[in-house]
Length: 209
Image 1 (cartoon, rainbow, N blue to C red):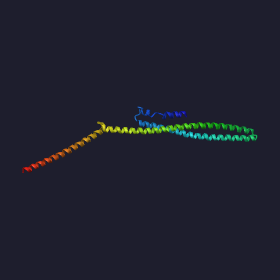
Image 2: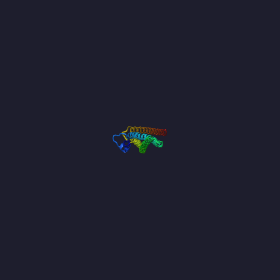
Image 3: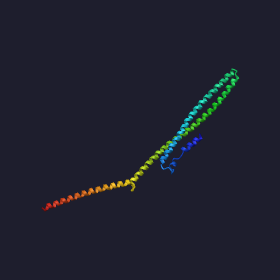
Image 4: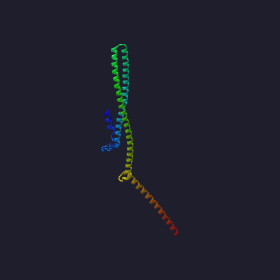
């Protein structure tokens, strides 16, 4: 049992910050997901051990009850044999009663020990379950931060990096539109100017006539 707890402690009690700081891990979220899957497996192992311990306690309880009943039965039979003057049967019944009492005592001790171990298993399971919930929450927080970091990085590439193709596409489009606007404005001005000159010219001709 001690070895089981030692392995579980080594696998679950690792510091998340140390995990994320490992230089060889290119993707901390992926590393964290793997660590969580491993921790979930170890937690499930403890749950199964607790289930087995429940069954073992039930078996100890049943066997203890049987031994206690047989001890009481042999004691009663010893009294009957003694009253009947059957000394040999009396001695056999007493010997059997003593054996069953000894067995019942050992089974009771085993049951108490198993119950103590079960309490320890349940405590460990609760600790590990809380640790897992905390780690899942931590993962969601990290994923949120990663999403913001990635979005900010993409936005910075588009809006701040002059060497980025997306930036140049926006710049070219803006220059093209400005060129069109300039041409339209110039033509409008030219047409308006030419019209005014033509009107002046017609006015001068009318005066001359």
